[in-house]
Length: 149
Image (cartoon, rainbow, N blue to C red; front, side, top):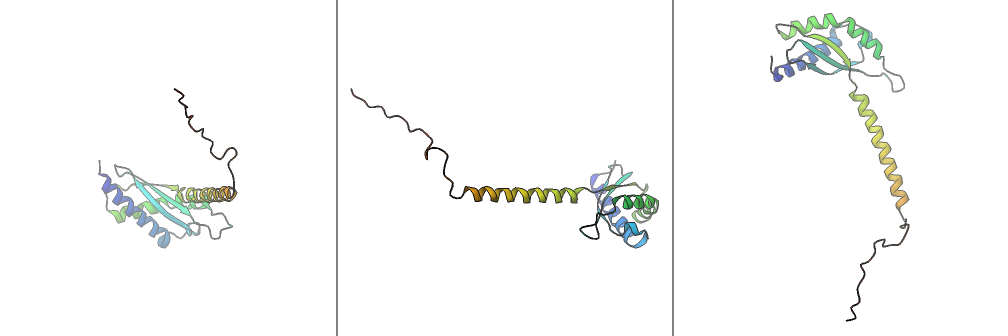
């Protein structure tokens, strides 16, 4: 069993090799907007999961995730051969490509935070000049007993 430090180093190296290969070696136009975001390698160094995202050309056009997934699947053998040649490990890890959902989740979180901030501003705006709905001091003062002894 390999240590986690070696697995992290190998994962980082695989990310670099795959990203460089997608940019310079693989000539598939569907991979032009693919960015490698992270790679995880199992403890036994036999399997690597490469996370990627597809950037849109314009904000109004949805990125082609299906085309990118098909292109990565077809280039998997070439990419694994390049990883094996450039890493020098005894067993070249199998590559699995997964869409990275972190950018989408971050965008959703930012939208929710902006919505919460707008609602907080609305509450603050309504609270200006508001008066309590009952007595100004809703707490009862303790009764003072008159001692007539």
